[in-house]
Length: 430
Ligand SMILES: *[C@@H]1O[C@H](CO)[C@@H](O)[C@H](O)[C@H]1NC(C)=O
Ligand SMILES: *[C@@H]1O[C@H](CO)[C@@H](O)[C@H](O)[C@H]1NC(C)=O
Ligand SMILES: *[C@@H]1O[C@H](CO)[C@@H](O)[C@H](O)[C@H]1NC(C)=O
Ligand SMILES: *[C@@H]1O[C@H](CO)[C@@H](O)[C@H](O)[C@H]1NC(C)=O
Ligand SMILES: *[C@@H]1O[C@H](CO)[C@@H](O)[C@H](O)[C@H]1NC(C)=O
Ligand SMILES: *[C@@H]1O[C@H](CO)[C@@H](O)[C@H](O)[C@H]1NC(C)=O
Ligand SMILES: *[C@@H]1O[C@H](CO)[C@@H](O)[C@H](O)[C@H]1NC(C)=O
Image 1 (cartoon, rainbow, N blue to C red):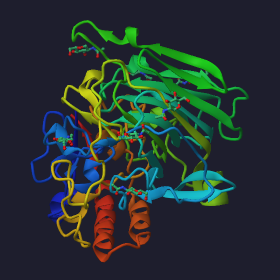
Image 2 (image 1 turned 135 degrees about the horizontal axis):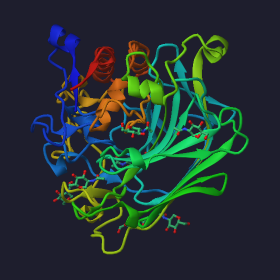
Image 3 (image 1 turned 90 degrees about the horizontal axis):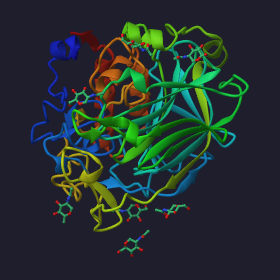
């Protein structure tokens, strides 16, 4: 079991310190949404990553934008929004991000400057079965991890993870509702043995009855739903809920992380490596990304074509419906329980400090890491454990890159301060 101890939060006694949440400790009604990182809030906390099982109620999280067939290229950042700006309109912004992206030669470069916590891109259109495909050159170096994953709001997860200490292989993994099972991971060799220098195409073909990991057109691994049956619990422990595509570069080998995470990542990060000296950052390069949506499973309740919602916090496949419900919040103070709150006030005065934009603490995969030592029980822990002593840079980026209303700027700055505090979170395994 993992606990977060936040000495500085206690010392500074800041009013905006977010309450933490889990499936056994739901958020209070005034900050009803449990973010991907396990903290309660409103606004962006209720969007992508909002966990219905840990939130005040299933309806606290905003409905999830439905899947869209789309190819993404990177000539500019027109379809990309900072996580401090996005209010749930996926037609306006396909991606939200935090960290330090660059756009070069039609590619996205996710960077991780010295002592930072990297970069995270999350697609705003949920996928409920489909195929994702990415042309990727991974990062390199021990302790440096590139991730290309599908992650649902209840932590169903299907992963590719590139560990920078082993460029000949890519790791495959899956989780059901964040339950750790060390038997789930796999290791696929990549032709040519150099995931850093060579382009390869990595696909996840996620269907209701099976999932395949495919590299350069070759099936490397097949997971059958039928093989995930849990006799005791009478359920399939198979990823089965709407998930977002997330791409990230993160410092798994940060010295402050759990030893198991560091070992899995091939050792501690060298912040004076060749890439840091030459470029000033570690980096992973993303080329074209394609998403193909499959149709929903048979028998699913369908009353529109706008959004997916959870109808029960059991959160199995049959607990998801397709609706015409709107996905856009009126302001950062709004929640799934009152979507329009603050829509007509430009200052969004209803929101309260950083409790409206969750800090991602950098590019942690957002879900589980390959960490084998700190038996974390939710994604928050792996992400927080990946936040090193210098999340300041990530926070600053968010703070200085805002150009919206003063209220938004202030929130972003508070958010960046919060990121600094999160960075000193000490992870204690009990
Ligand atoms: C969807 O919309 C219906 C009708 O407006 C509403 O009753 C219901 O609560 C909404 N559900 C969610 C999850 O927002
Ligand atoms: C979402 O954005 C699109 C494109 O800018 C716009 O046409 C649409 O009206 C917006 N939807 C909502 C609900 O704000
Ligand atoms: C993956 O396979 C390679 C080659 O067999 C091995 O060196 C590496 O340690 C393996 N990685 C994991 C995580 O099992
Ligand atoms: C199967 O379900 C039981 C009961 O919920 C649980 O204790 C057990 O850990 C599950 N097995 C696996 C492999 O997750
Ligand atoms: C996406 O494309 C697939 C394959 O071409 C097609 O079967 C499916 O209906 C499309 N889905 C949507 C939501 O457009
Ligand atoms: C979604 O539903 C609306 C209203 O029923 C319909 O006009 C529209 O064509 C549908 N869109 C898609 C992509 O099916
Ligand atoms: C994780 O830990 C378990 C139990 O300690 C061990 O059996 C397993 O080999 C470890 N897995 C990896 C990937 O290190």
